[in-house]
Structure formats: structure tokens, C-alpha cells
Amino acid sequence: MWNVVFFVGLASLTAAKLQNMGPCDRVVATDGFFNLTKFSEEEKGTWTFIKVPAAKSNEDLKSMYLTTKATKRPGQYHTIIYYKNKNDQEYKVFSDEDIYDSLSGHVLAVARGKNKIEFKISFLKYVPGRLAYYFICSEQRGDRKVDYRYVVAHGPLNTDEELDIRSLEDQYRFLGALKHI
Image 1 (cartoon, helix red, strand yellow):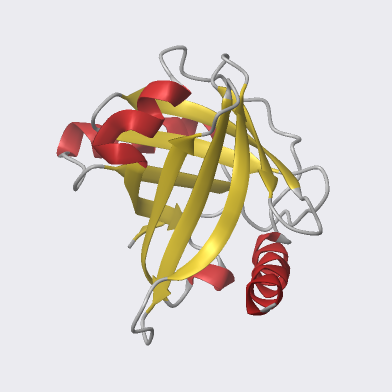
Image 2 (cartoon, one colour; image 1 turned 135 degrees about the vertical axis):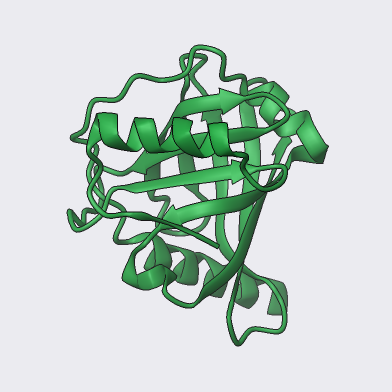
């Protein structure tokens, strides 16, 4: 019974944290080299967040990482995002999702739980073994104060990688800044 209560609570918490994700009204070109299978296998599918939107919900964010693993269904993956705020002792679950590969640099993410919020994730830059820069949006929610995009990597970004991200930021004129965590 406690497992059921935990998962229902987790689903409610996830839905509350993701409710401000902006609408999918921005056209972006995806990186044709993105491969979700490879992404899920690198470093055992674990990626560290390097940059996140400078949004109110991220003010106290200290650290965040994600794990992605293939399921038994072809083209379906399970992703969990963990976060730690400045005063937290342990990581907490930010999001628990099923991810579906579209093979075009876009993936569909569906939050697990009662609300089943759907998100479109567009990978704008993918360097296998190094980094991924992606934009995420949802038609079910919407906050136009900031565009939600993230940089995940296997270590700190070098100067050229920082310049590549900055160039894409300038190209798309995303709302809001990115911040390092």
C-alpha cells in the first residue's frame, strides 16, 4: 500500500513541477545525428545537467541528472530526472517519463502517473559521448516567460561547446537565459 501512496504522490509532485512548461509554438531544426538508443547507452544512460533555464523554479537548483534506459518495447525508453536543491541532502525525483523515439531528432515524453502530461523534446545539438542540447515544450501547459531548454553532458563544457550553445541560443532567440548548475 505504501508503494501506491508513494507513486501517486510522486506523480502529483511531477505534474506540479512540470506544469509551467511552455507551448510548442517555436519551430526548431533538430540534429540529424541524434540517436536515442546511443544516448541511452552512453555512460549507462546517465547524463548530468550543465545548463538549465534561469526560471524561478530553478533558483535553488544545485544539481540535476537523468537516467534513460530502453524498455522491452522497441522505440520506448524510461527516463527519470533527479534534482537536488541547495539545502537538500539527497536527490529527489523531478520527473518520471516514458520516452518514445521518432527517429527525427524529436522524441515524445509522457509523464508517468495519473495526469500523463505529454512533452515534445527536440534535440538541437547532439555530440555523441559529450553533450546534448534540447528544447522541451507541451501543448497541455504553457508559460511564455521562458523557453525550456537544457544542456546535458558527460563533464564540463569546453570553450568551443559553450560557443556552439551560445550560437544556437542566438539563432533561436529563446526567451530567458540559461544558467550553469
